[in-house]
Length: 201
Ligand SMILES: [Fe+2]
Image (cartoon, rainbow, N blue to C red; front, side, top):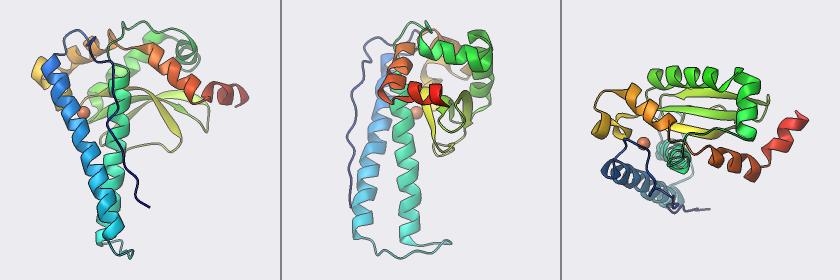
């Protein structure tokens, strides 16, 4: 059965210091492009013969791109969701970071190293299975750990920062760190009811 997605709205008026409106607007257009392609792929899947081959088949090709675009959408939504804060980490997410990293500073050091090492994404995620938060590195959208819920997502593809920072990715990361809306992570924890799950783990 065909499903469709629509672009979400985000409170992007309060942009992170150092990231221009033009960069954000272009980035948001890219995100909407993934939405369009996802819906287009769904249409093609409806019309394509349901037979497969693991070397090549039209169904395989569409399924690969369905996964790619779905993950691109998910990660970009998580990225836009936490933009525009004041970088003040508090509440449940801070408690979890303290539990699993020892301190916020330890987390930030690991995040910086992860983001400088990644080709695509640095993701603070809660692993539903083992009950820990970790920074994961994703070189492409679909590098993912099953059942790890992204809470704070940083896009380090060049399109996210090159317009404003040139090759200085480290400066972009520092700017982003000072403008994370950590309350969005706490809201996601409440929305997904994973706080109770962690207590039970
Ligand atoms: Fe991006």
